[in-house]
Image 1 (cartoon, rainbow, N blue to C red):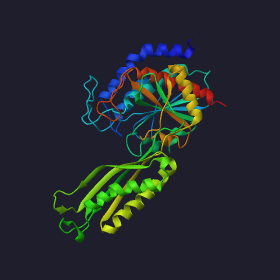
Image 2: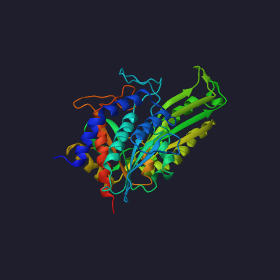
Image 3: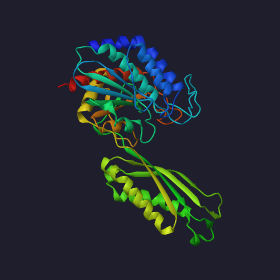
Image 4: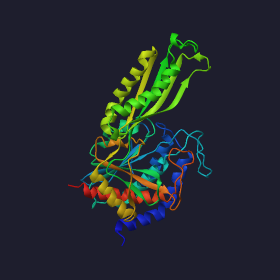
Length: 398
């Protein structure tokens, strides 16, 4: 049995489905890095203008805010991130990135297209019978640290918002599936850079200098081990170093060395304590050896903590949009997502949208140059966001 909303969405997607796929491919071929998403912003604004939908520029220079509906009642925010990643597109497809070293390998082109489609559909669906408003947020710079949402959550974009929702591509799920979870669904992530300096010297006489390579080795092993002993094991605090630079000759102790990595935390309490712990552990490791140490600690974003009521609304919308079996359990990931900053001010939920072709056993992961989606995820995402907005307007009405 169909509903008026389902019928209207069918008609909308029949009329605009191919256009949305073409729009996504345009974005994919012309990706833009964090904070410089000018063409992406302009493309979204231009399409909304054709539909007679007014847009509002954000304080971040790129990205947009759009308010739909005029009735009294709650305000529901739907958010999509719009930036790309600094890596090569390895796919052989007609819409392969034309920008060297920049690629939509995290699905933000898909997120943007889905939100655009949902906004166009809601523009026609939201009449006087629907209380409240829907706010679309095309957010820049999710891939930066701490991320565009950290800035935006301190601006007027969340004024009067009652609940916020976001979707993210998940290649672990098939098209038509949506990963749902109440409570933490992502983890916090910070970036750590440690720079060492010393007088240098001959490897035959390390006792006469500060052996920076030895100190690096101690930092690589002792800091993660110390964090594991000083934090709640249930919060899974992990530090992994991905860059090590020191020296140019086997028999020369260098004068400069650098170590960089990320710290990931599942629990908010341990994340709040992490920076002070890292600073203390690094100082304790370096102190006996006489090196000079500079620690650069960049806090990222806290875990996305899904509100139980907001998840219930998202689950009901998933059922209505995609069927009774579409919603599936999902685990908390160790990935980071700056949507969490928006949820510092308002309740909300973050769902994982399946993008793997049905029946495909393997699919390229996020942040890989070969990542792509089954574009059937676009109409599925449009249906889901529209139903989510309408369900939330009803659920959060007084």
